[in-house]
Amino acid sequence: MPLQITANERHAAIVFKEKTLAGFKPKYVKGAGRIGNPASVESGGSQVKGKLMAESFYTLKWEKKALFLLDQRVLPRVEVVRRLTEPVGVADAIITMVVRGAPAIGVTAAFGLVLAVQVARRKKRPWRGAFDEAATLLAATRPTAVNLFWAIERMRNVASGLPDDPSKALLRLEQEAVAIMEEDVAANRAMGVRGAKLLPKAACVLTHCNAGALATAGYGTALGVLRAAVAAGKKIHVFVDETRPFLQGARLTAWELMKDRIPCTLITDNMSATLFAAGKIDAVVVGADRIAANGDVANKVGTYGVAVLCKEHKVPFYVAAPLSTIDRKLRTGAAIPIEERDSSEVTHLMGKRVAPEGVDVYNPAFDVTPARYISAIITEKGVIRPPFSGSIRKLFG
Ligand code: MRU
Image 1 (cartoon, rainbow, N blue to C red):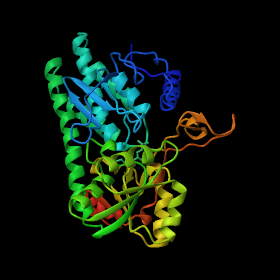
Image 2: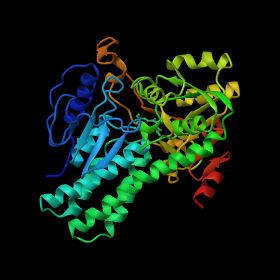
Image 3: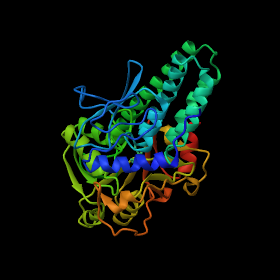
């Protein structure tokens, strides 16, 4: 049977997420390898108790042939880790945002493919078919962040040259997924060093969404730049947009910064203009989900508005993203697919309805900031400036 998530299951997963956030005890969502609720333990997504926060925390970990994900749906209220052993559980974790953030979902998908081969070997089935089915399933989870497709493609390229022996294939694919994970952290650290130099010795920096350790394999893109600036002795104060509707800023960025004792102030998204007008923002640093060949940037919805404010108030607007986020196949941002998410994210707050029943809702998860608003893009290979078409071409040259 091919692995599939039906429309009903997808909807159930969204409702499930909402109920989890509301603090209810949701029913187990049916299907092999589905993610359990915080109190449940089952094969596809089990809870690991007492294993948290080794250094500060980890977003994802590959250990003893299983993928461990810190469940971001319930942060900061609950810190719980999910143990995943099947690709369908991994796909479910991406759809329901147990794990989110462009680089993090790419790394997660790579391990989802390793798990597919592992399961096939255990069940004595040909690994290639299982790999292909899982690749199709994982590619259908979220459409905007290109890192997902980039990681699947990289794993596919490796898989195409591997022998039929499942043990040999598994070993090599596991190595590749680990490399993708480790390269992501290294890229973030390199971006941090380069990006930190752009910030003044003392600065108030605004960020939108969560482009931190939680959105990557570790350290973060935008927050990596801020972490590196603090490590270099700069006095950084971060203004954190709460990031409606999923609240990645309020729930995740504020949590991460506080864990690292980086001074921060949480604001609602509609307050940032007031801060710009008062001259309180010295720079903006955000992440990206996909960057087109001309430098247009898709990132969490609301980013474009912040960029426009930067232009008006002559504040630099920086985007920090690894090369794996740049999609040179797309000429401009107009071609970037924008994910629309369930209306309940807008009509409900923490599981409680705040809008009238039946109201029409529009819920795009991302917007596109035209390249002309961007002061620089910070990558692991260098900081590039406009005109981006040329500087992006050179970066890959
Ligand atoms: O919907 P999300 O939470 O996956 O969206 C994430 C973002 O928009 C991040 O800002 C982006 O992925 C950059 S993360 C390094």
